[in-house]
Image 1 (cartoon, rainbow, N blue to C red):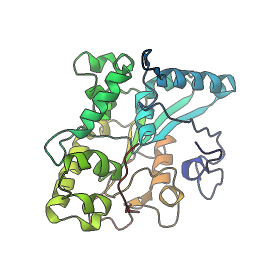
Image 2 (image 1 turned 30 degrees about the vertical axis):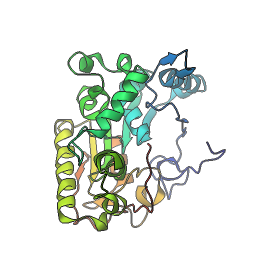
Image 3 (image 1 turned 135 degrees about the vertical axis):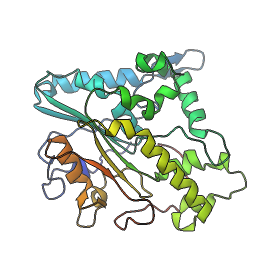
Length: 304
């Protein structure tokens, strides 16, 4: 928990770095509850208290009292676990404001997929299941989902986005670095280390490993198929090995930022938010996108 965090990318207050949102009031909410601000449970014997939902409500109450209630425009955004939080709380955020306020949500790298990993199991479903049960997240999830699916499945955005009424923009790398490292080919699913070099550096992936990742990309596009059919929603799925592209200046808005067609991320989000154009950007599959800022890792890491 650093004392100071640089506000770059979508949080920048400089017009040359953030042309559409530089003069907005910008707030970053600290996150450490482990369930995207959606848990509410306790274990008295072990002195464990999970209060993500209450923290979210307290933060919103505080911001509204400071004047956010009078906003003409509002955008709830987040990256990674924060991107999932933006999806989970999108409609709830909309309800805070009068109907005359333009309210939209942006999920950056929050499109966590419920897919089969390299061992044939479902590593991320197992992880999410533990979070949902421990923190009793189910009671915070949309009843329209939990009435027909297990609460763990309803923690996955692919089952939440069809139920989200508020305009939502999904920004995600098709070969999301965190998902490759931690849910598609984590060490637990790869005990012999066949994927170790590939998950750290895409350039070391074999042809069969690349094909596996191409299949994941197809599943991601299938998951957003119905979502993208709505004019109110936006989409930017670039075929990069990246994770979180809104708060990094080099990926958000710079001379060599990632693009789909002739449009970068900042312009795409701005066009969608201000209704300047419909934005449904899907990049061609690896390796054709030459604008990517691909991530390469020196060592393993886990977390969101």
